[in-house]
Image (cartoon, rainbow, N blue to C red; front, side, top):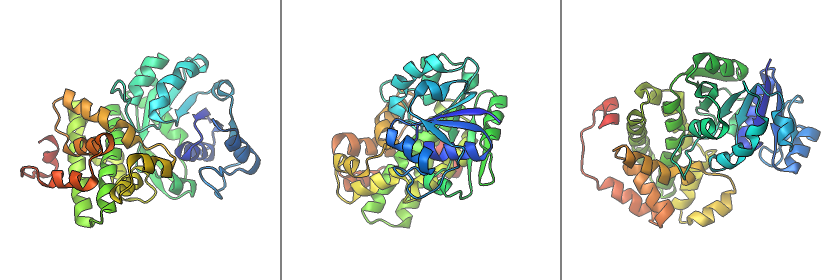
Length: 339
């Protein structure tokens, strides 16, 4: 049994808190909102994010960062990616010297283009061997209902990857581990951008052919970027790659897919943000991912068009028209990822 702190009580943070509690760990969750703390501690339900779904009695919540981090052996960060640097610059004061820090964040830092594990290592002065990324087809609502799911646990130190995997193994949640941190994080960030594009296609009324094409070419695009950054191509065929891409692109529970749908149906970016009231990492990270691709000589047509919609007001119909009018290229199956 490990002492685990889950920093963040949103949709997925709460789901992970439930997982580590069900796995038999001593877990405490930090919440920004006092009403979330009171709801979970008093009724074992997070009424703000998962109304009506009961959480383990052993899951307790605090709004005190120091209390949450005190003596924690594993620290799980479940906050919006763009808030990581600011929060961690303060939180690092209470992180135990040998604690393992786990990121659930699926985005890259907009100002620097750095992956979340890189920001954690830099800001927290934490060796990469103690920084772990979790990425997979993990829709929070299904997990809270204890429906079966699997995920990828990535760390450059395989011993710590296995340690975290053991701490989150339950009858309904099965982790696999890998040393390919770069691949896991590129998958987690890029699949959100592809889901935005796929959601726009769906919102415009396009069918399964268009969506299957978008997902497949999106997989090629994210794999190209990953390979350029040193990732293992096989990671993109695993849970954190095609698995998470399918779930995020096709599920009505996906924030990024839903955000794209709203854009496809005619809402503006600001109107969609007002309607959803949740963080959509694809919107926050797409421009930085495009710049990362350009800096590494990677062609990223889908990401480029999503940025045009999100940042510059292009219509989704024009975006999809631009993608369809590109010059034909050879399709070489999985090898297309590097073309």
